[in-house]
Amino acid sequence: MKVLITGAGGQLGHDLIRVLSGSHQLFAHTRTDLNIADEQAVYAAIRKAQPDIIINAAAHTNVDLAEQQANEAYLINSIGTNHVARAAAEAGAKLVHISTDYVFDGSKRTPYTESDRPNPINIYGNSKLHAEKFVELACERYFILRTSWLYGRTGSNFVTKVASLARQKEEISVVDDQFGSPTYTLDLARFIEQLMQTDHYGLYHASNRGYCSRFEFAQEILRTLQLEHVRLVPVSSDAFVTPAERPAYSVFDDEAIRRNRLPRLRPWKEALVDFLLNDYNKEESKS
Image 1 (cartoon, rainbow, N blue to C red):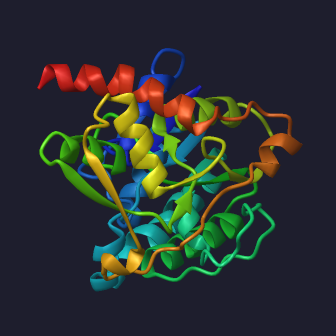
Image 2: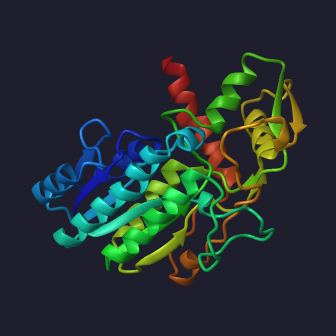
Protein backbone atom coordinates (compact mmCIF):
# COMPACT_ATOMS: atom_id res chain seq x y z
CA MET A 1 0.00 0.00 0.00
CA LYS A 2 1.02 3.61 -0.52
CA VAL A 3 1.38 5.36 2.84
CA LEU A 4 1.99 9.08 3.34
CA ILE A 5 3.39 10.13 6.72
CA THR A 6 3.43 13.67 8.09
CA GLY A 7 5.76 14.48 10.97
CA ALA A 8 8.14 11.75 9.80
CA GLY A 9 11.08 13.39 11.59
CA GLY A 10 9.62 12.87 15.07
CA GLN A 11 9.99 9.95 17.47
CA LEU A 12 6.94 8.11 16.18
CA GLY A 13 7.70 9.08 12.59
CA HIS A 14 11.10 7.41 12.74
CA ASP A 15 9.60 4.16 14.01
CA LEU A 16 6.77 4.29 11.48
CA ILE A 17 9.39 4.40 8.73
CA ARG A 18 11.28 1.54 10.41
CA VAL A 19 8.15 -0.63 10.62
CA LEU A 20 6.44 0.24 7.32
CA SER A 21 9.32 0.62 4.86
CA GLY A 22 9.75 -3.09 4.24
CA SER A 23 6.24 -3.80 2.98
CA HIS A 24 4.71 -0.48 1.92
CA GLN A 25 5.55 2.36 -0.46
CA LEU A 26 6.26 5.34 1.78
CA PHE A 27 6.01 9.08 1.24
CA ALA A 28 7.61 10.30 4.46
CA HIS A 29 7.42 14.05 5.04
CA THR A 30 9.23 15.84 7.85
CA ARG A 31 8.16 19.22 9.19
CA THR A 32 10.83 20.83 6.97
CA ASP A 33 9.47 19.53 3.67
CA LEU A 34 5.75 19.58 4.54
CA ASN A 35 4.25 22.10 6.95
CA ILE A 36 0.68 20.91 7.50
CA ALA A 37 -0.33 24.49 8.34
CA ASP A 38 0.21 25.24 4.63
CA GLU A 39 -3.07 24.14 3.05
CA GLN A 40 -1.87 24.28 -0.54
CA ALA A 41 1.26 22.27 0.26
CA VAL A 42 -0.80 19.58 2.00
CA TYR A 43 -3.19 19.17 -0.91
CA ALA A 44 -0.31 19.16 -3.41
CA ALA A 45 1.62 16.45 -1.53
CA ILE A 46 -1.42 14.21 -1.15
CA ARG A 47 -2.62 14.69 -4.73
CA LYS A 48 0.87 13.84 -6.00
CA ALA A 49 1.27 10.69 -3.87
CA GLN A 50 -2.34 9.45 -4.15
CA PRO A 51 -1.83 7.40 -0.97
CA ASP A 52 -4.07 4.63 0.28
CA ILE A 53 -3.34 5.65 3.86
CA ILE A 54 -2.23 8.90 5.50
CA ILE A 55 -0.68 8.88 8.97
CA ASN A 56 -0.78 12.33 10.55
CA ALA A 57 1.99 12.36 13.15
CA ALA A 58 2.80 16.05 12.71
CA ALA A 59 2.16 18.24 15.74
CA HIS A 60 3.32 21.13 17.89
CA THR A 61 4.25 18.94 20.86
CA ASN A 62 6.05 21.34 23.22
CA VAL A 63 3.35 21.51 25.89
CA ASP A 64 4.83 24.44 27.82
CA LEU A 65 5.77 26.48 24.77
CA ALA A 66 2.22 26.08 23.47
CA GLU A 67 1.03 28.26 26.37
CA GLN A 68 3.11 31.14 24.98
CA GLN A 69 2.57 30.21 21.33
CA ALA A 70 -1.13 29.45 21.33
CA ASN A 71 -1.68 30.68 17.78
CA GLU A 72 1.13 28.45 16.50
CA ALA A 73 -0.17 25.44 18.44
CA TYR A 74 -3.70 25.83 17.04
CA LEU A 75 -2.39 26.54 13.54
CA ILE A 76 -0.44 23.28 13.42
CA ASN A 77 -2.41 20.95 15.67
CA SER A 78 -5.94 22.05 14.80
CA ILE A 79 -5.98 23.88 11.46
CA GLY A 80 -3.14 21.77 10.06
CA THR A 81 -4.97 18.58 10.94
CA ASN A 82 -8.08 19.93 9.27
CA HIS A 83 -6.07 20.44 6.07
CA VAL A 84 -4.80 16.85 6.21
CA ALA A 85 -8.25 15.44 6.99
CA ARG A 86 -10.00 17.23 4.14
CA ALA A 87 -7.23 16.33 1.69
CA ALA A 88 -7.46 12.69 2.83
CA ALA A 89 -11.19 12.70 2.20
CA GLU A 90 -10.68 14.17 -1.27
CA ALA A 91 -8.08 11.49 -2.08
CA GLY A 92 -10.26 8.68 -0.73
CA ALA A 93 -7.49 7.69 1.66
CA LYS A 94 -7.81 6.24 5.12
CA LEU A 95 -6.52 8.62 7.80
CA VAL A 96 -4.66 7.64 10.95
CA HIS A 97 -4.46 10.64 13.26
CA ILE A 98 -2.27 10.69 16.39
CA SER A 99 -3.82 12.37 19.44
CA THR A 100 -2.97 12.54 23.13
CA ASP A 101 -3.93 11.75 26.71
CA TYR A 102 -3.82 15.51 27.34
CA VAL A 103 -7.39 15.82 26.05
CA PHE A 104 -8.36 14.76 29.61
CA ASP A 105 -8.15 16.82 32.80
CA GLY A 106 -6.83 13.99 34.98
CA SER A 107 -9.57 14.23 37.60
CA LYS A 108 -10.64 10.61 37.11
CA ARG A 109 -9.04 7.86 39.19
CA THR A 110 -9.88 4.86 37.05
CA PRO A 111 -8.51 4.32 33.52
CA TYR A 112 -9.98 6.52 30.80
CA THR A 113 -11.99 4.78 28.09
CA GLU A 114 -12.81 6.13 24.65
CA SER A 115 -16.32 7.05 25.85
CA ASP A 116 -15.10 9.34 28.64
CA ARG A 117 -15.70 13.03 28.07
CA PRO A 118 -12.56 15.04 27.25
CA ASN A 119 -11.78 18.20 29.21
CA PRO A 120 -8.30 19.54 28.38
CA ILE A 121 -6.56 21.83 30.88
CA ASN A 122 -3.87 23.32 28.65
CA ILE A 123 -3.49 24.81 25.17
CA TYR A 124 -1.80 21.73 23.74
CA GLY A 125 -4.60 19.41 24.88
CA ASN A 126 -7.28 21.77 23.65
CA SER A 127 -5.65 22.13 20.23
CA LYS A 128 -5.42 18.35 19.91
CA LEU A 129 -9.07 17.90 20.89
CA HIS A 130 -10.05 20.38 18.17
CA ALA A 131 -7.99 18.29 15.75
CA GLU A 132 -9.98 15.17 16.66
CA LYS A 133 -13.22 17.00 15.90
CA PHE A 134 -11.92 18.18 12.52
CA VAL A 135 -11.01 14.59 11.62
CA GLU A 136 -14.45 13.33 12.62
CA LEU A 137 -16.16 16.04 10.55
CA ALA A 138 -14.00 15.72 7.43
CA CYS A 139 -13.48 11.97 7.10
CA GLU A 140 -15.54 8.81 7.04
CA ARG A 141 -12.59 6.40 7.13
CA TYR A 142 -10.46 7.50 10.06
CA PHE A 143 -8.63 6.10 13.05
CA ILE A 144 -7.93 8.52 15.91
CA LEU A 145 -5.26 7.13 18.22
CA ARG A 146 -4.82 8.76 21.60
CA THR A 147 -1.51 7.78 23.11
CA SER A 148 0.59 8.83 26.09
CA TRP A 149 4.07 9.26 27.58
CA LEU A 150 5.84 8.45 24.31
CA TYR A 151 9.49 7.46 24.16
CA GLY A 152 11.72 6.09 21.40
CA ARG A 153 15.29 6.03 20.20
CA THR A 154 15.24 9.46 18.56
CA GLY A 155 14.59 12.83 20.15
CA SER A 156 14.27 13.80 23.78
CA ASN A 157 11.85 12.05 26.12
CA PHE A 158 11.41 11.11 29.78
CA VAL A 159 13.36 7.84 29.45
CA THR A 160 16.40 9.34 27.76
CA LYS A 161 16.38 12.35 30.10
CA VAL A 162 16.33 10.16 33.23
CA ALA A 163 19.06 7.90 31.82
CA SER A 164 21.21 10.90 30.96
CA LEU A 165 20.74 12.57 34.35
CA ALA A 166 21.55 9.31 36.14
CA ARG A 167 24.97 9.31 34.51
CA GLN A 168 25.65 12.88 35.62
CA LYS A 169 24.13 13.11 39.10
CA GLU A 170 23.93 11.11 42.28
CA GLU A 171 20.39 12.28 43.04
CA ILE A 172 17.36 12.99 40.84
CA SER A 173 14.01 14.48 41.89
CA VAL A 174 10.98 12.96 40.14
CA VAL A 175 7.29 13.69 40.63
CA ASP A 176 5.30 10.89 42.24
CA ASP A 177 1.77 12.27 41.80
CA GLN A 178 1.41 12.03 38.00
CA PHE A 179 0.16 8.69 36.65
CA GLY A 180 0.03 7.48 33.07
CA SER A 181 0.72 4.72 30.57
CA PRO A 182 4.24 4.84 29.08
CA THR A 183 4.35 4.00 25.38
CA TYR A 184 7.23 2.76 23.24
CA THR A 185 6.95 4.34 19.77
CA LEU A 186 8.06 1.11 18.08
CA ASP A 187 5.13 -0.76 19.64
CA LEU A 188 2.73 2.00 18.62
CA ALA A 189 4.06 1.95 15.04
CA ARG A 190 3.56 -1.82 14.87
CA PHE A 191 -0.01 -1.44 16.12
CA ILE A 192 -0.69 1.28 13.55
CA GLU A 193 0.46 -1.01 10.73
CA GLN A 194 -2.00 -3.67 11.86
CA LEU A 195 -4.87 -1.23 12.46
CA MET A 196 -4.57 0.70 9.20
CA GLN A 197 -5.17 -2.46 7.18
CA THR A 198 -8.57 -3.00 8.83
CA ASP A 199 -11.92 -1.27 8.51
CA HIS A 200 -12.35 -0.90 12.27
CA TYR A 201 -12.64 2.87 12.12
CA GLY A 202 -13.05 5.15 15.11
CA LEU A 203 -11.34 6.30 18.30
CA TYR A 204 -8.71 4.26 20.11
CA HIS A 205 -6.66 4.53 23.29
CA ALA A 206 -3.33 3.02 22.26
CA SER A 207 -0.59 2.81 24.88
CA ASN A 208 1.47 0.05 26.39
CA ARG A 209 -0.65 -1.74 28.99
CA GLY A 210 -0.65 -0.92 32.67
CA TYR A 211 0.34 2.32 34.36
CA CYS A 212 2.77 3.89 36.80
CA SER A 213 3.75 7.19 38.35
CA ARG A 214 6.61 9.20 36.90
CA PHE A 215 8.61 8.15 39.97
CA GLU A 216 7.91 4.44 39.38
CA PHE A 217 8.76 4.92 35.71
CA ALA A 218 12.15 6.39 36.68
CA GLN A 219 12.76 3.55 39.15
CA GLU A 220 12.27 0.97 36.42
CA ILE A 221 14.57 2.87 34.05
CA LEU A 222 17.40 2.91 36.61
CA ARG A 223 16.82 -0.72 37.60
CA THR A 224 17.02 -1.90 33.99
CA LEU A 225 20.17 0.14 33.29
CA GLN A 226 21.73 -1.06 36.59
CA LEU A 227 21.98 2.53 37.84
CA GLU A 228 20.19 1.92 41.12
CA HIS A 229 23.00 3.61 43.06
CA VAL A 230 21.49 6.92 41.87
CA ARG A 231 19.07 8.19 44.50
CA LEU A 232 15.55 9.05 43.35
CA VAL A 233 13.74 11.66 45.42
CA PRO A 234 9.94 11.63 45.18
CA VAL A 235 8.42 15.13 45.00
CA SER A 236 4.99 16.56 44.26
CA SER A 237 4.15 18.32 41.01
CA ASP A 238 4.09 21.59 42.97
CA ALA A 239 7.89 21.36 43.16
CA PHE A 240 8.09 21.82 39.39
CA VAL A 241 6.25 24.95 38.31
CA THR A 242 5.58 24.79 34.56
CA PRO A 243 3.67 27.13 32.23
CA ALA A 244 1.24 24.35 31.30
CA GLU A 245 -0.77 22.36 33.81
CA ARG A 246 -0.55 18.58 33.36
CA PRO A 247 -3.27 16.02 34.05
CA ALA A 248 -2.39 14.19 37.26
CA TYR A 249 -3.95 10.96 36.01
CA SER A 250 -4.15 9.96 32.34
CA VAL A 251 -4.13 6.18 32.48
CA PHE A 252 -5.74 4.49 29.47
CA ASP A 253 -8.13 1.57 29.13
CA ASP A 254 -7.79 -0.01 25.64
CA GLU A 255 -11.50 -0.87 25.42
CA ALA A 256 -11.80 -0.23 21.65
CA ILE A 257 -8.79 -2.44 20.89
CA ARG A 258 -10.29 -5.29 22.88
CA ARG A 259 -13.79 -4.76 21.44
CA ASN A 260 -12.46 -5.02 17.88
CA ARG A 261 -10.29 -8.01 18.80
CA LEU A 262 -7.13 -6.26 17.71
CA PRO A 263 -3.69 -7.18 19.11
CA ARG A 264 -3.12 -5.32 22.37
CA LEU A 265 0.11 -3.48 23.03
CA ARG A 266 2.37 -5.33 25.47
CA PRO A 267 2.79 -4.31 29.15
CA TRP A 268 4.79 -1.12 29.68
CA LYS A 269 7.58 -2.73 31.73
CA GLU A 270 8.23 -5.34 29.06
CA ALA A 271 8.38 -2.67 26.37
CA LEU A 272 10.67 -0.44 28.43
CA VAL A 273 13.17 -3.24 29.08
CA ASP A 274 13.20 -4.07 25.36
CA PHE A 275 13.85 -0.44 24.47
CA LEU A 276 16.59 0.11 27.04
CA LEU A 277 18.48 -3.11 26.34
CA ASN A 278 18.17 -2.89 22.56
CA ASP A 279 17.33 0.41 20.88
CA TYR A 280 18.70 2.71 23.58
CA ASN A 281 21.94 0.82 24.12
CA LYS A 282 22.57 0.70 20.36
CA GLU A 283 22.19 4.47 20.10
CA GLU A 284 24.39 5.01 23.15
CA SER A 285 27.15 2.84 21.72
CA LYS A 286 27.23 5.00 18.59
CA SER A 287 27.84 8.20 20.57
